[in-house]
Image (cartoon, rainbow, N blue to C red; front, top):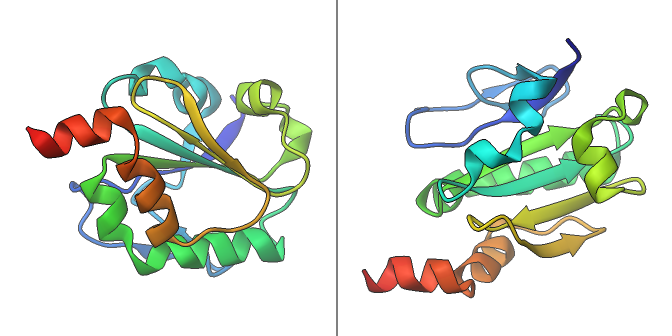
Length: 143
């Protein structure tokens, strides 16, 4: 099976480790393609932030990962799972579905809808604000 880097920031993981490239990783940095790209297993449980790049050395990718690492607790609070795909040669289901050109990130709600696509890095605060505007998140805050 082809490995896909999958980073999961959840309350179950106490801390982050830093890989040799300076990219934050969770407990298990790789997952099987079938496991990581089956988006239906996240439906109604987690929001997804899918980060694409043509290589792990892309400066925008490195910047995005550094921005996410600064305020991980905001992502945990909003049930965000971060999936990363930095190998365009693998042609994963995620790449076929979202068709990234170079660096891009996609924010997918718990309902499976795409709420945000951006070709430039955003910090966690901006991403959190976008999540807080989602109808399901507003309902979660009311309850």
